[in-house]
Image (cartoon, rainbow, N blue to C red):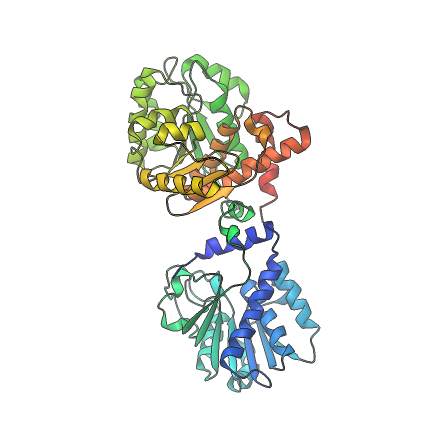
Length: 506
């Protein structure tokens, strides 16, 4: 049975809106699906149907179900556990407002604490059907009151019981029951099954109900992917809580690339970035911005004399690393880079490999197998890395399949930079359609590296970080072109990263 995690389901919901299918429509279809599933199994007209709802989206599905059930003649009692003023999403609030106006056909009872359950004892006792729309996938830890008492009351009833999406109390990922759980006769879950529902007695019969989520919502990068990696900031946060990125790059040939990656990481929200260029260009990089911390390395290019400095930074400081921007391909660099990869592997740090580092990695392409690594090749670098030429852009599915196969073969995440970026960890594959031809200007790939490294350094999984980074990089590029036309530079993208991310923060 195909499954979807609660996090990926949340992303698909958000991305559906991005693709033109509003979340309000998905909620409407979910609520309608509950009616259809009751009709399949029970008499609805004149039946006493009691719905236990929370204040989240699961409760919103219950609100919609209440309206549909009332419309076909059911005697509906909606029990809201919580404060109506704290209903969390616009879709749920909209549907609650509709119920408030249905004074003749739906009885609404508010539960604020455990003492309020006395007034619904008889309603539950006389129910023909009970519907659980309390928490769904929103469970975290032990069940708090008044939900704990609500579960007990729900389970004592002899009525036919339906759980919406996930029985309250069941962890949707692991299937574990932390405390107590609703015991349903039927669980109607939406789009795809959540992993924790499989082979669980408390789910009863498992019904998977389509609600109109486009398949592309799981394939195309969108706002949901960004929201999944925007780390919330606690008021008591400290410097370093939001990542520390080490940029290993630059050479006597190139100074801008590592600086662009570093500045992009900072603009994405990382607390600290250290750039480690050769001494030859260190002062140049310092001059780009006072925000950059520069630790110069001996020589004109990366060489073995740099290893003691880098070892300390890798072992004792960094939470994420970028290797490659402006690195050059001197023999000394080729000999030193594998030793750096080994240090990173020993520390099990997330890593982004770009530019010249990809060319060096091609000699031992499985060096990073099984690590938390993102490779960001363009088409030519992909050929150097794999020895295989990508199919033409017109054969997008074939390109996606090749990237996925090589990600699996190399044991890493690959972010192929192209007109449609392709991101795969060998298990899942997504595409990003943001961006424009103006981004062919040099340095935009370094910006992408910095954005992705920021998310990696904050602990997000490589594929998730790469998908979000590709989307943000492309949107920043689109904004830049909208403001300036096709006359942009990579630094224009960097200045627009905060504006881009802010839109998706919530």
